Amino acid sequence: MTTLLIVGFIGLVSGGFMLLSLSPFELAERVAQLLRGRKKTLARMIKEAAGAKKVRGIRRTILETKEILAVMGKENLLGTLTALSIMLFIAGAVFSLLMNNALMIPVMAVGLSLLPFWQVLFTANFYKKQLNAELETSLSIITTSYLRSENFILAVEENISYLNPPVCDVFRLFLAQTNLLSADLRLALENIKYKVASEVYREWIDAVIACQEDKTLKTTLTPIIAKLSDMRVVSAELDILLYEPMKEFLTMALLLVGNIPLIYFLNKEWFNTLMNTAAGKGVLALSAAALFASLAAVIRLTRPIEYKR
Image (cartoon, rainbow, N blue to C red; front, side, top):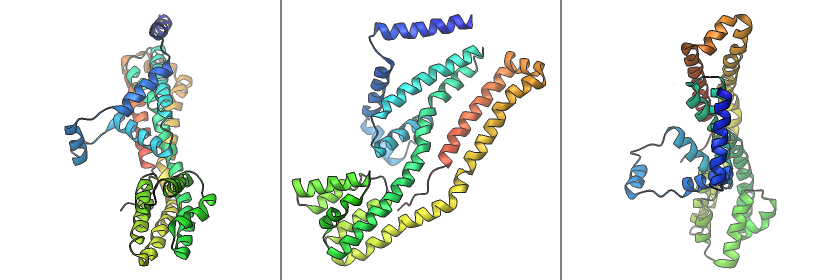
C-alpha cells in the first residue's frame, strides 16, 4: 500500500509539472528569484536596522547562504540549491513513508532539504581562509609599491599580474574605472570598498583614502595588513579546537545511526519495537531531529576567526 501511495504521489507531482509545462529547475529558479527580489516594507526595514527582530532558524540559514553566495560571486547557484533542496525534501518524505513512520516525515523532509544550504555554510569556511591568505599577499605587495612610488594607481598596475581571483577582479575593476571612466581616485576606492567581505580590507581601503589627503599616513597601511597575518596565525593554532565539535558530532552520529542495525542483530524484538510501535517511531523521529539540530549547531561553531572593528 505504501508503495502505491508513493507511486501515486510521484505521478501527481509529475502530472502537475507537465500540465503547467514547468520543470523542477524552473520552479526552483522562480522560487530563488522570489527570495532574491522580495520587497521589504519600510517598517520592516526599520525594525531590522534597529535590531528589534532577529532572523532565526531556517530563514536565517537561507539568508546566510544567499550572502555567502553573493560574496563568492556564485549567486546563480541559488536556483540549483533550491531545486536540490526540493528534491531532498521529497526524498525525505518518501523515505519516511517507506519506513511507515508518519512522525519522521516533517523531520526528514525539512532536515534533508537544508543539507545543501548547510554544505555551502561549511565550505564557506575554507573559502574565507583562502580569501584572507590572498588578501594578505595582494595588499602587502600593493602597499610595498605604494610606499615606494606614492602613486596608488601605479602600484596597482605594477602588481595586477601577480594577483589571483577574487582580489585581482576587484583591482581590475578599480583600474578600469580610473583609466577609462573617471580620474577620481577616492570615488574609485569607495566603489571597490565593499567588493570583498573583509573588515581588514575595508579598513585598508579607508586608510588608502586617508593617504590621498595626507601622505604621512602611509605608515598605517602595514600595521593593518599585519592583522591578516595575526588572523592566519591564530586560526592555525585554533584549527584543532574549531573542528573538534565536528569530530565529536560525526562520532556520535555514527554511533546513533549504527546502533539501529546493531539492535537488529542483537535482539529482533527490540528492533521490531523500535520500528513498528508508536513509542519506537517517536524515538526515531526525536533522534533524527536531534541529529539535524546538532549538525546545524556544529556548522555555526566551526566558523573561521575574523577581525572585527
